[in-house]
Length: 267
Image 1 (spheres, rainbow, N blue to C red):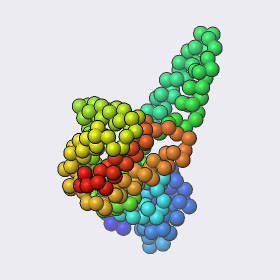
Image 2: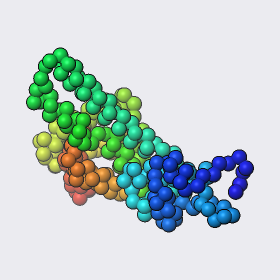
Image 3: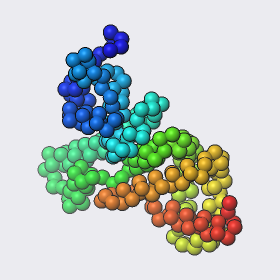
Image 4: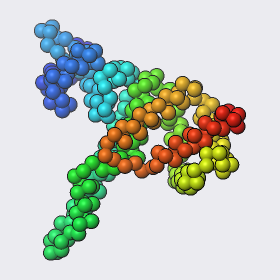
């Protein structure tokens, strides 16, 4: 069974350690996602390689991917880093939610202890933030966005392109610039003229900033990222959640760019 120092666990112990059921392990095996070692007695055993694979499967399932999609992703050790990063983002998002909810509860308890009644607005906020699913935040949306990119392109090329896009807007200075861009975009969208020179100049400026990234990415990769965004947005809209940005602004500038291409004003 390999190195004598390596630990091996049976299905029951493996399931207990990973927080799943033995039935789930059988399903993963049946789908070809994990292949347990067989002892001479034919007992299934799970070592470090199998546990690492199961970790990837469980994380991707938690992100909402189907077993069919997961099958395309697992098995490549180099993808483990991407999967762990997605898991970290998701967990950080959950931690932020718990901290906000706990703070609200502490404030409410303090008021009650002082003999003060909670107002209707305070009760509504308390209910919304601690019981009802909170609005989709940036970390959660991006984690799902990245997961869908990886699901549709197991080669990882599109994921690396998306990483480069994120780097372009990383850092406080870039974030401030992005915020200013989004505010300007919102104002242009309110005007609503897809043929205005201001809207077209805005598109040219944004495209100039990302020209290097677009040149390094194939047309197929760019389309895959756009498709993943559309699906992520549709999923968010299907739930009773709000977004931290206005999708209508992005749609407005998609129309601006489309019109510019049709008129030969844009490559």
